[in-house]
Image (cartoon, rainbow, N blue to C red; front, side, top):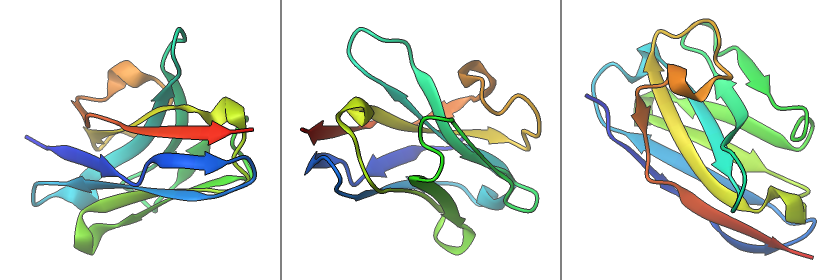
Length: 125
């Protein structure tokens, strides 16, 4: 069982930055693939970024490439999402997700068993 708790969301102006954190419980954090998804009001949840359990391989949605960076710190059981050059269209509830040794289909939300409650990011224009 893994519990995930996100933090770091808030209100920021367009062009600004935020760093989201997701702290996980459990002793085998390094064996989980971790991801960030987001959901805006009236829209479906969408993949943002993931980082693998082998070699920290990362994937990004095209909409955030070059602006967002996902990283993990296994010693602290924490995954981060650094978000720069934020745009109003980045406004959403951001949730982290975890799955044991997931190596394929990391962009698909229903591949992940564990989810946090989410943290709201609002970008004003």
